[in-house]
Length: 304
Image (spheres, helix red, strand yellow):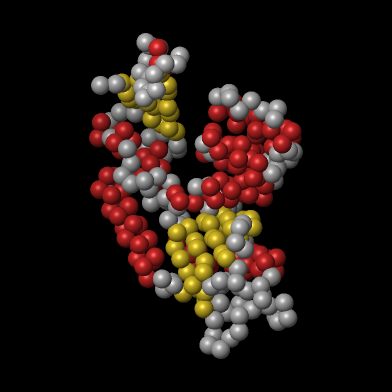
């Protein structure tokens, strides 16, 4: 398995909450259930991820397999993204075509590849005749960035398309210019234009939320480049609190301790981009946004 694929799978699994881990892995259906039963899901997450990545390496997981796992994770957490809604329109008097999903997938991918060589397109069928499309954009000289994909959800036999936030604004027209359908008795049609005005209420709602997030982000971080910082570390000490009496932890006098470390080649810019990308709510926690003002990247958090 390629190192980039292993890293992609590792990062995706790290995003999955432990309570959803088995459910998502079973939905992925890449690792057999008998192999999953050999994995200790009670160990530390970092160790668990290493074990799962090793199993994927032994099965020689491909980029397509890794992209499918990311689609499934996103389906479970679709509420964390901001979606734009489009309506496809036809020429007046044109009949509704019978739909062939496999032909649609093939044609959709061909059109994107014809316009942009470096692009990865993955599909997953869902309930209610929907298809999820994951598009990782590249450029003329760079391979697709698997960590900033755009997702498209299309319900066949309906004119509606939902798209998530696209980081490369220059590629947005590629989605809005062409969306195809196929009639089993007629040649492929390529004249379905996406109309931004499907439902003014939905578009307005998305626009207002995006503007709020951008405003809060600018108020928090400013509109200037952030200082370069590669990590921030937080030590937490807190006593166990619960509404239920009894239990081992309830009798513990020593505080619970944990260490959290955020790392990135440019951590503050990464934090600044979280809310606009739909990954986190705005505003971010003051524990993250206070870093530039305090001039610190080591923090100790205790009970008051």
